[in-house]
Every structure is written in structure tokens, then in C-alpha cells.
Image: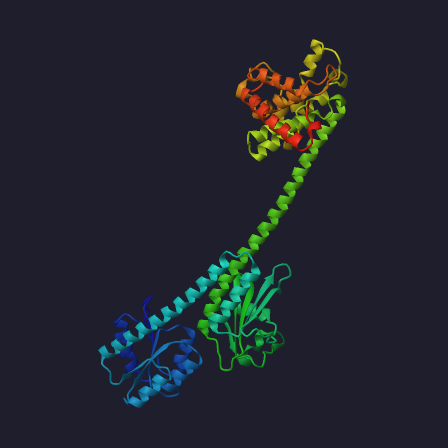
Length: 513
Ligand SMILES: [Fe+2]
């Protein structure tokens, strides 16, 4: 007879007398317990192997298997159920013998209902405490292990922590962990062995096919002595092997490895509780290893992205250099102008403490600012005399032309403003669009000052280079009309500091006189 009651404590009653079974089942069910009854010890063992019970109440004198023999078998098979014996031969000796064999308590027949309830409740309380204690201890270990491995991205470290915890937790001698190599489908990718005594035990190779089948069936791998042989290739367990447990490492329903635990201590047997603890450990290990692998993959793809970015950056620099070269060759007379404008633009941008990315964009824009001159006739650029109004009109197209040269190259779009706007005037009197004040992009206003200073301090076809002081005076004079007044003032200041530094470094000959 079985009474189901959800979370109610499960009690197995074993007695060859039907009346006793029925009475116990009836009033224990009334008390809210879930009760199952069988008539002999063999059936009780079968039942205990099939389902978990919180308490076993068994008669002492029964045919086939006595209560004491049943107790011995429960102990031997480590079925882990708390037992209360019923005896009609109420002698102290029998009771003591039963307690020695591991019984928790005993009841003397004939018993009173209240007495049975009292003993059952006390036994279940004890059982719950035991179970909670075990769970707490397991939880603590698992927590510590999880803490230790959760943030680790080092698979070797994770394996080490897990194997040491496995050995400590079930008092094993050796633990091994085999990880599946997803590419080859073999379990030899990472094998780690940790032995409690640090010795090599000549371990056999696990038979992964047999194990996988067993795990797929939901059957635990827990075997003692020679019975463990089938879980090894060659079908031989080490002669000194006492006990063996294997649990799978699973990630998203896929088996990714196996944790194996060995005992070579005579008489030592792992039990179902040990196997469950190792299962929890294996599941934590599996997710930590999965995380570490994902992290590894992420880092690898990040590295290749960084490499790709670097080569893009190289390509960008080469493109800029290529354009600058083309420009230099089209205008030999102003050779070095682009490079110097880039230097002066950088002095101003750095002095303004602009973000590094902006400084670098301004420097590149300095190099590229006159790229539109590639489209202007060479003889006109280097004409010694005054340009005709028509020639001026053509020359003034170079900012627009620069914009059009850069537009088809997406990676050069950041440099368009420098080309397009470096001849705009702060008061709106410049070209090509007559932009005014801060409507002119910063890069355009910066390059305008740098461009003008270099143009004045370099030899041109139509005049000799002007001295530094004259050029500075001109920039100050045109602050607020041609140039952004704040930038003009800042440029003069930062330029003085730079020139001082150049002289101190013995590079005074490289600066305009
Ligand atoms: Fe220009």
C-alpha cells in the first residue's frame, strides 16, 4: 500500500504480518506521511534501491531476510536510510545489537500508536538534520570551489581546483579529468591527474564509449574493485583499486568531459552521496571551463580584430602618405609645406590639450590640406608674378577639389573638413563657402593658422621667406578677421615654447628665422 503526499516524509514499512503493515500504514498516513509497505527484507532492498526513503521501519523476525540481515545489507550497499526496528522479543540485547548494526532506534511490540509516532518524528528530525548537515557541507565546498574558479579564465587552474576539491570531498586517492576535444571528438585534449599522495598510480584509460552510453541512460558510474573494469579500456581495473566513480561534465546538454575519482585504500567504498557531490562539482567545473573557453575565443577574435584594425590604420597612413607624395610631386616649389603645416597644426592641437584622436586627425588634415592642388596646373602654382583674376578663381577651387578627391575614400572622410575649410576666414571673408566664426570646423581654423604661418616663413616663387617675427606679427594682426582670435593667440604662445625647445635640443636650424 502506498500513500502519496507530495513533500511528505517517505516511510517504508517491512513486516511479514499483514495486520501490522496495515495498522502502521493507516495511522502514519493519517499523520501526513507517505507510506509504502512490503512483506520481506528482499522486497525492501529492491524498493530502497529504486526510490529514496527517509525512514525504514522493519520487523526483526521475518522469513528469508531478518531485520538484522536487512540492516547489514543496507549498510553494505550504503543505501543511506535511517532505520527503526520493531521487535516482539523485547530484550535489551537484541536492541543493542540492532543499534550496533546501525539502527537508529527500536520499538517494542506490542506498541502504542503515540509511541510509534514519537519515535518516527524523532527519527525523521534526526534524518533531516543529517541531510541538512550534508547539504550544508556540500554547499560550502561547492561555494568555495565556485568562488575559486568562477573568475578564472585559466582552464589549467580550474582543473586543478576541481580535482583537489574532488579528492578532499570524497577522500579519494586520485582524481582525473578528461576534456573533450571538440575538433577530434576524443577525450584526450586535457588530461589532468591529481594524486593525494603525489604518486603515480598507473591509471588505466577510461573507456569513454562505455561511459557515454551509461551517462546517456542516466545510470551512475559507481563501482568497487574488479567491477570497475568495464569502465576502462582493456577491461582491467588496477588490482589495488577499491572504488571508482565517474561523473560527466555537461554544458547545455552536451558532454564536454569526465571527472574520474579513484580510491586505492583497502575497504574504502564511494557511495551515492559521494557521486552526487562529485556531480555538482562537475557541473560547476563544466560551466567554468565553458566560460574560460568562451573567454579564450573572445580574446582570440579580439586579437585578430586588433590586428585587422592595426593594418587598417597602416593602410590609412599609407593612403595619406600617398596623397601627400602626389601633391609634393605636383608642386616641387612648396616641397615640405604639407609636412610643416602638419607639425604646426600638431603644436596648436596639443597645446589646446585636445583628445589624442582629435590631435591625430588634425595632424593628418594638416598633411592633406592642399591635396586639391593636385588638380591645379603646376605652372600656375609656381608663377612668379601676380595671378590674373581667372587664375585666382581656378586656384581658389583647390579646397573644393580636395573635398572631391577625399570623398570616394570612406577612411579619409575625417580629413575633408581640413581640406575644405582651411581658407575660410573667421569674419566670413574666406572661401569657398564664406563660413563665419565657429561655423568653420575647428580643424579648418587650426590648419588655417598653421598654413598661413608656414606660407609666410617659406620661400615662394613670388617672394622670399618672411622672418618669424614678421609672420607672428601678421597672425596677431589678422586675429579676429582671418583667424580665430583665440587660436591665433594660442598658436603664437605654443609656437614660442616649441621654438625654445627646438633650440635647447640643438635643432634651432630647423625653425624659421
Ligand atoms: Fe591651401
